[in-house]
Length: 418
Image 1 (cartoon, rainbow, N blue to C red):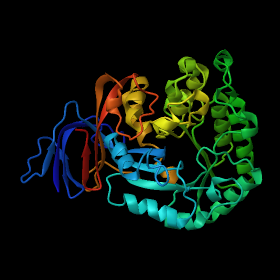
Image 2: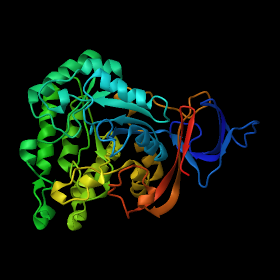
Image 3: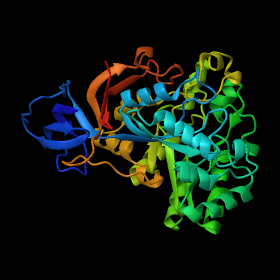
Image 4: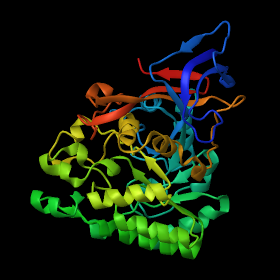
């Protein structure tokens, strides 16, 4: 296939074409030429869109769909289409399935369903069997099958010796262990952030201390065992401080933050919107300030959409009974670009691959085309019509955003918003 992208401004600080408006000729999935006014014959498709910008493909370290088990929430096929239309070329696919991905055959099955699609998925295998937190899962077998990390998704590793064993065992193959940052004994049956708003609304709270205590414990275990630890979706001010100090001590730890935890505080809970029921919970302005500072300083390694489709039967219910989770892929670019400069936004959307041993794409002649296409200038109110997912549980509905994805060019495929 021969594709010509016209008049695109490249946003990529590692590229010699950064901030330049150029044409990009792609033949059979390879970037053949980058330059001004490229002339080419027998073009199969030409892309010429308003305020078109291009970057290397966006990456997300924590996306869940539903399949297998919860196909009514989202299938792998439509989930990947959603990711592509949202600008993502590569994603780590995590839990929220039944059964969980805890053996090599389940990893192989997921990969086979996505092998011919535009977005490349990298499965995250369960850390423990059935994610029950009792016995370690078949980590090495899953690694051999293609798993890039191990996590029990939103379930904390409550037994410290289990985490110790996982960190020790994973060192045999340079595996990356994840530990969700919540002490369940402290969190109890909490629903939202424990602060003034939880008291006003009469909702049971999850204190930031539950996150901080678990992170402190996990970092102590990491210091003893060695190995590689990833702490997904931190949300509290002190969590940033703990991880910053651990990195200064030389511990091999990384962390992420969910984009919605950078945007919303628990003030949005006043009307009891179930889309705002997420884990970790939305916290305070003080926490958001610390998280943004942690991103700028590099303490927080990456952002994630933490995309979690939930069907209407489990969201359009009383707040206490609703499942946790919000959509995030479709709104991620517009949300980040609304609060950060464009170059910082793109840098964050493309960071994190190295932690999962995923090779970094490049925008240069001779490289495989791994590109996200977007318009950073358009401002709009996010509506249900902007959602490509089967489920519609987005916290960003009616939110004013800046910037829209056009789609992607990846794996010799083109996926564009109509």
